[in-house]
Image (cartoon, rainbow over all chains, first blue to last red; front, side, top):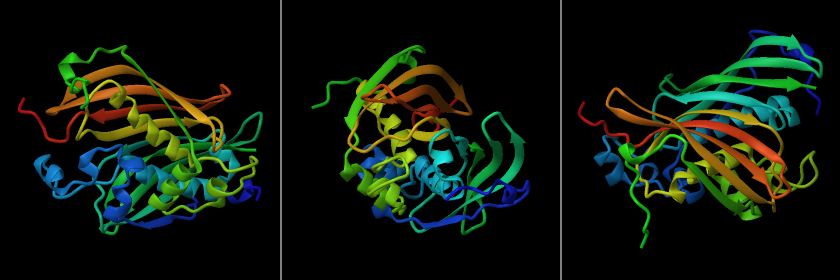
Length: 137
Length: 143
């Protein structure tokens, strides 16, 4: 479905994505790259964490899902994101990916949209923060 | 028995390069979709690009494999990534992944590495570029 750029006003929030974290999902080898800090409680405690933490890119995937829903093929072919993982995400957390449009400008091929993007937990804490851009054709 | 050396901050040289490859299988696409609970049919059945394509973050996640091609690693933590998506990655293609260590530094008791990566498919199509920052281990070292 084509994106209607007139609806993408600066200040508008795009539709969020909500995810429930589980150790089963966090532990998959494709996610963890066999890094025990993501699935082994003993290893995590020895590293100074209370429990295994999700990979940062899991939260990036939630942000990417939100951006794919909002911008479709233009996100997958040409989107960019710059995100920092500022707090750990644990099994049992509910993570909400959010985005707010901060800029909109014409380019030679479409409309460039800039966004602040972030993930927050049920505690209201941001865990992943950054920006994204996409040119809507 | 893995005969690679452990990843030690002092032994790493800025400019080191790494490479890896893998086949982007339907099973990987399904496992990743289940893992992030994103069952978009674009990744599993068909997409506007013709045929299924990979979740873009599945491709980015595979960049973490690069250090493992050269070192035994455990306990590193990803802190940032700056990613440019260029083209969809088509399921079934062999992917080639390249990385280069471009910076290393210590900050507040932790050791940081910055790697620039890119994924290219077997046809030479650039899929994404990525600049990723990790800390070698979460536990701080005494300063």
